[in-house]
Structures are given as structure tokens and as C-alpha cells.
Image (cartoon, rainbow, N blue to C red; front, side, top):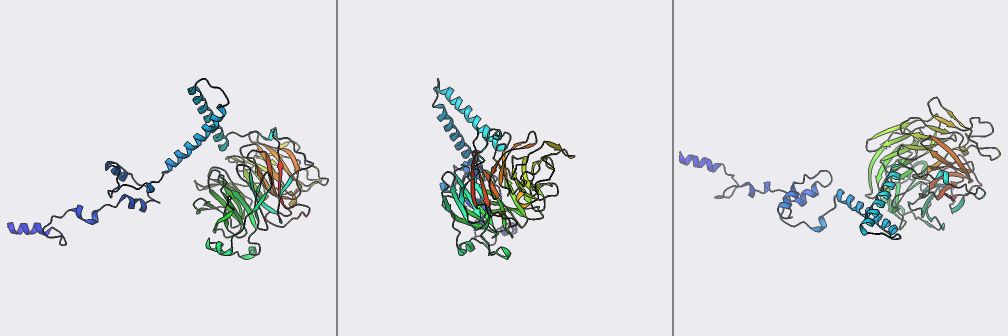
Length: 515
């Protein structure tokens, strides 16, 4: 019996194991754990590490699971460390500003000076945060001095064909403009000195994945319809009839990448403030979400039933769009939801944010509308904002009237003597000076009109008319509010259903004196 039991015990050992050695799972390579370096590579994109390996590394004296020291090159900053570093740099910058201001004053004690600097830093940061969030606004409209209407806009940059888009950098020093002839110019605001962007060769575009133009847009495939500049001023995005979003480096004016994805022309672009995230709208009825830093496509936003004409974006991941389906939509990207705003039976042409909860729109009947996210209909309507008068007279706004839906319409409702249904009276562009109550609108009736937007009173009040001959296809305010830039042409931005041969194709600038 003893021999049989011993025989049975011996049979439990693995057949392939070495004879005369005791079996152990520690010696089996199947049960060996992967190294920390290998696990990090395998789950870097999708999974979140539980942190157990890091605790083991600390117990073992800073070594990884394989027993070797971790290389310094492999240590990467976590998102929390990046945010902390950026906040520290911003705090140091603000302290330097406060220190420079305090150097001019005499202080009694060093401790009191440090406390005063910190309070000044906190005040500056709080003011910037409130302005960016839209909770407070700069009162500029009431302090703008009436421009010299005899001179009007001054032509700063010339183009061969109609200008379709203008954009300004955040420092208000550099401007960008695009035209139907396919040219993109970068110019200095003070001197007007221009530098041209050179399109890459067809081979380079194809190496980036660009597709050949097709259909009726093949002849004018390089016509540019939209421009956008990132907040840091590093990137310029352009889009047009070739169906691609092109990325440029503003420092070297080199073409970086061509992004394909839209099936029809790209009509509008906007960078999200403070980021390199880009939104692009197209005639294919979609809005696409990109990240220009990573050169990556993120998502496609659908909702419109016709071409997307204009879009705008602030710091939040919200996109305001206008389409030929007579709808304006506010897309909440993170929530994957949308709000639909339907004006009276007229076509919307342009839109822009005032703050996160209020925005303006321009229509083809010559009216301007003020909107709020809490209502599906406009809270205020300015009728005949750019009407055509026989003797080039300005339209006087005669009081206000209440609508049955609690909205307000302002303006002369008698259409005798002027034409507000013409192509020349369409509100083709509208812009707001960020963080303020000053707005501007443009059409083809020979002037750009400044407005004071009083959102608390739900009122849009006309200020001044600045003469400018031509179709005002794009407007851009300086962040400081010191000047206004307009892209002018002999034809509308998206078509040829009107013509003004007396107009000059180019970029015009109007200085604004704020008292």
C-alpha cells in the first residue's frame, strides 16, 4: 500500500517537469507578471491604471516590477500636473504685473506689500474670469465717439476679387483676409504691410490625404470662404470650395495639413477660445469637430437639413450655427443635445455670440434679432436695419411695439419709400466686441451700422452709420474695441446674385475712439 500511495503522489507532478525537482508556480513563466513598462504601453489610450503597481514600486524603493529603475525620459506629466504648472505660470505672471505696479509706490513693510500684491492678483484674475464667463461686460457702446462719417472706412488691404472672410489675432496686431480668387493674406494692422500664403503643390496636398475637386466647384476649387485664428495665434484655418480644412502656421506661413471629411464646400470656421479645437461647417449639412494640435478628427455634429452658412463658438463646447433651412441651432457638444430656434418665415444669414446665453442673428429681410437660450423666439427684433432709401437717408427707429409672444419689434413698419427685400439690404455679417455691449452689422446698402446691445433691458439700440460701399461679407472687432475691420467685395460671399462695380475689393478699417 505504501508503494502505491507514493506512486499516486508522484503522478500529480507535471509530466514535462524536470525529474527530481519540486514544482512551483513561481518558476513557471506562464505566471510571471508583465513589467510596468509593458502594461503602461498596452493600456495607455483606453484604460485607467488602478495604481497598484505604483505602490509596489514605492515599497521596492522606486523600482518598477522588473526590478530596474525607471528612466527619466519615460516620466510624463499627468493632466493634474499640467494644470498645476499652467496655473503657477499664470499666477507668477500676474504677480509680476502687480509687482511692477507696486514698485512705483512706497511701502512700509514687506509683508504688507506681499499681501497687497496677492489681493491685486486675485482682483485681476477675478475680473478676467467674469469677463470670459460673460457675467459682466465692458460698457463701450455709450463711450464710443461718433466717427467722422465724411471719411468712413479706410481701405487697408486690396484683393483682386471679393473678400469673403477676415480675422484678427487676440493681440490686435495681425490680421488675415481671404478672397474668392483663392488668396490668403496676412497683414499688419498699423502699417498695412501684407504677406501672402503660398498654396502647396498638388503632390503635397495628395500626400496629406487631400481629394481631387469635383462637380461644379472644380473650376474654382481654391476659392476660400472662411478663416479662423487660434487664441494663441499659432494656427490659421481656412476652408472653401475644395471641401477641405487647411491648417497653416502663422509664424512661417507654411501649409501644415489638409483635412478631408466634408463632402461639399466648407462655408464657416471657428476656434474654441483658449484651445486649438476647431469647428467647421459645410454645405453637406454637417459640423465637424477637430483638434488642430493633435491633427485629429473628433466628431461629426448633425442636425441641419440644408447648408450650414455661419457658426460661432466661445470658450464652452457649444456651437451656434445658422443654415439655409431657416433654423438656428445651439449644439451642446458634451451633452450631445441641441436647441432649435426658428425665427419668422425668413432666411437666416449670420449669427454671433454675445455671451454664453445670448446671441444675435441677421436675416435676409434686413432685420437683426436678439436671442436668449431660455426662449425659442427672439426677445427683440430690429426691423429694416439696412434698408435702401431713395435719397440715401438713414432709417429712423420709431419707438417699439410689443409682440403677442412678449417679444419686441423696433423700427418703422411702413415699407413705403424703401426696399428691405433687396439683395443689398440682406444682413450678410454681424459681429460683437467680445465681453462688451458693442456690436456691428453689415450689408450691401452702403454703410456699416454700430449697435448698443442692452441685454438686461432686451434692447438693441442703433448708434452710428459708417459709410462703406460694397457688400460687407465679414466683420471683426478688435478685442480692445479700438477699431473695426470689414471684408468688402463687389459680390456677396456665397454667390453672385448682386453686383456693385463701384466697390473696392479689399479690407477696410475704421478706428473707434472710446471716451
